[in-house]
Length: 303
Image (cartoon, rainbow, N blue to C red; front, side):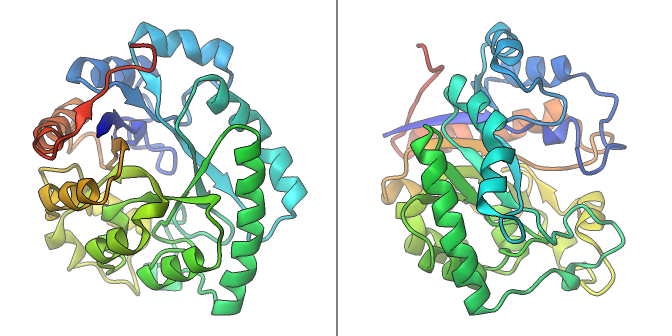
């Protein structure tokens, strides 16, 4: 089995909270990630949006593009409109041989609204998820036909947040809809990570290695605190610094045959959690776990 270790830039610069690392240079993020040992990085708001610009930069830091967020709105937009909206990002990811494009449903999301509490997120009934799933399947099939698979990201504050919502979505979508598994978000929502792995491993194409601090999580007031409040309070962290058992999470994934990227991602205040230091904690935690579980760690796409 093979695995690769990548990282998301959100620890250096948070696009939803620009005050967190807003003045940090992209070059700082990339050099830190490469020097720690990661071989891939996901995109963020400071990244160039064409392969002509981004490709040489990533090559300079010996990094591959290992995915990145796409703000989808299929819940409310027309399918053809969504195709037009994704086209340029899809081209970038295809050109740079990314493993997938990460789809997050942002229609009616509260993930970026500091004044809206966690318990006010949109709730869809089964019929609404079924209709959404059909449209999402068509979109993902089209993207796949264009050479770029989609990995759907269950995410706090969005229409698909909880384990039950994810189960329904997977039930009402075709195999074209791959899953991004994020144990941090699933734990935050109250879900069972091991049950999700057991039930949906055949759909998992991408893994965000995000941890949670249970001492922060249990003190949140869902009727008052927003998702961004939770981030500022430190609910998320990297593997090795939180409450989740990543040894067992990786074991379960390996046992079911998952191969691919493990991308460290933890939105934190860089003034309280220095990004390079926490990138190192995540790497030094995951690398021996992956090797113990029999994974061969792959370097770059061209090596």
